[in-house]
Length: 337
Image (tube, rainbow, N blue to C red; front, side, top):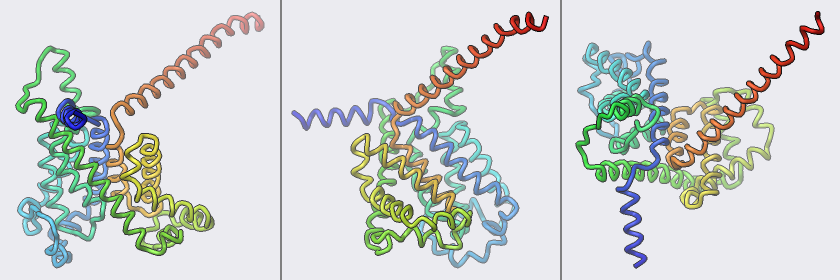
């Protein structure tokens, strides 16, 4: 029966193998870079932002709407706070390079939540999205590629040593794919809700929303670029409607590969523009990283093969040019003689 075949295909997809491993690995690196770009430049101001000197945010911090771990990132114990803060930086570095990711991620997430709870004023939508999706990714395999874990596993395989499997393969596959589904669902909800809310405002429907957004002084990273874009009314008008409808129709666009490719390229370009023109890079980085979860491993392999082919052709061309130059050297010597 068609229903039984559909259930069998779904069960096999869920338990047969882990999907989108390369996308998850790239997401791990982007998330790690985003957290480090927040923490490392703020080392000198860490006490004012999150530590003992951040008492000025306590009234607002007490109204936070999520579970926190204050005991691990306390404001009234400076020594413990220092250990926790620099421990978070160390764990983030290990998470980025993929060293024992399964162990590092829960520890990093706990300290990150504790730090974010100390000062909600420095948070934005990207931090909230990152915190939510990192919980889903506790079940996912984030270090299958581009990591020290993958390198260690490869060396063990070359030496004939087998990895110790505690959890059955079908269970780990299911957990990973459930994490993928939840993360993708989260990004779909973000785009759909954002699109619906835009439809309720007049600025998005009359094509002027981006013009007003780019005129907010607090979010002008490069005012010269904003001034330049203001000169093109048609460009802002078209970009406003593209942003509106690509987000609103994103749940439908991902169902067909051609429209999915167009939607992902458009949205990644939009978030890159938000990062450059409005300075909201943590949010943009998180959104771009999550958008990549809709790219299959086969696509990444095709892109990698294409890049390798281009590199090989370039090397062959360089070798041919060098051989031609060597062949010309004797002729030049004869003429000089």
